[in-house]
Length: 80
Image (cartoon, rainbow, N blue to C red; front, side, top):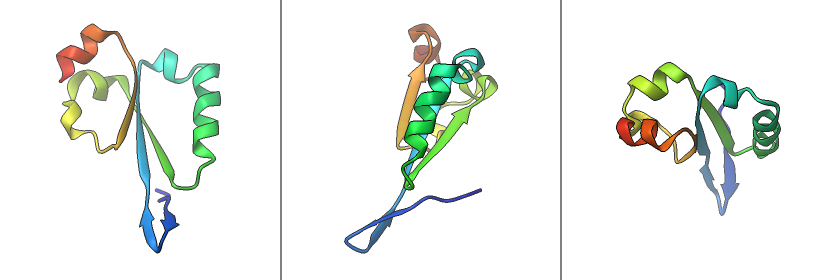
């Protein structure tokens, strides 16, 4: 897996962005355009979580600094 990093004042860092959306939405033309633009930054790593992970794994186990959610509030509230 490719690791992204950015150096500011000799400090390297990366930002991991997790996408939590049902497959239909995460593979849509609009989402692909958004992810393409975000992915142009060399220090941003994007992870798209599968529906199985979203519905069956605790949010606390997601290894991300940022989570972009496109779910109903009912599903998200029950996963926390």
